[in-house]
Image 1 (cartoon, helix red, strand yellow):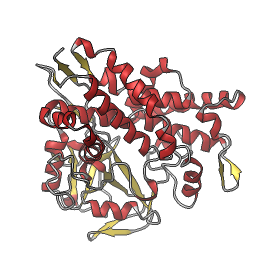
Image 2 (cartoon, one colour; image 1 turned 120 degrees about the vertical axis):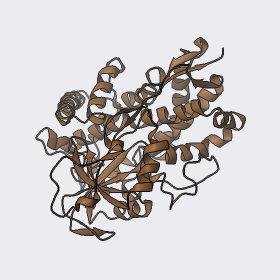
Image 3 (cartoon, helix red, strand yellow; image 1 turned 60 degrees about the vertical axis):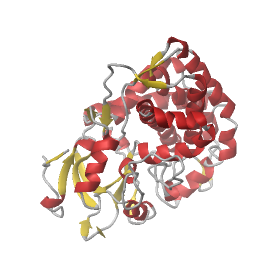
Length: 407
């Protein structure tokens, strides 16, 4: 699961605290990360370790394994910055920020003040019927044939339709957009990642210019009226927010749904528990968020700091892996068990000031998907003879899931 590093270490990094993890390999495995890799990380690593491949392109950084330490970092924007965290702009020689994701206080609060009303629970609740209709329409296309490839037929489309509608982007280009997203988030080839960032940037700039010239009633046209520090958002800010919605909306919920339905297809008793009592779906979503969170994020040390006696230098990346957090045995009782009555807090949708802007929409998408599947599709299982592969990296997901059911 771990091997020796291949790059030269910074002077302040002890050699005995260095690992290279399959968990961040950004490739497919035939073992489930939640069942094998993450428990091994908790068994074998201390609370802070230098992981030589924690960031795409085999860039190293500190990996935290304890939820309490993650909380400390996530609530401390003075010592840990998000500015430029994803290296998206830097990778193409530019200097914009992903908004609000890569911003720090005080301006972060200004951006959130402008954005929060649109993503508020009462606003998202109005989308419930649309989500249900979209999910039902997709499921009706394949439910009577008794099988599907879940990622292609459902999870790669359901949440993405919503985001494309929100941004007013053409649904017919979905496959192209998904390929750009895949080449940004699911590769260890930093050059390929950079080329895909450029494609997204060029496309979004063209789209934004068109909306400025021909504003409509879409979300992007509305951004032009947002204010920060007493002025309208500038072009870099509008672009940075559109980039955030594009990359965030085209991956996270898709990956999460794949992880959830893989588990349910492999565990008919847990699937039946939700069928018998659909009211449990609300808490089940929270338990699934804890157990199958897909995303590892980062902070950058702004000052010299110590964590558990280890010196962290300015510029060091500090990894906050929500999948690893969900299995911290010091924070959760029997974390390997999936219990729909757990009611345990998690950081899978962020923590502190940087809680996910779209967290209410993400929850509703997951709830709707579970509700409609369990209503419309008989008990489903992994298709006979199909071998599941799991993608381990900065976003854990199942690339393909063949399922079947009796009709």
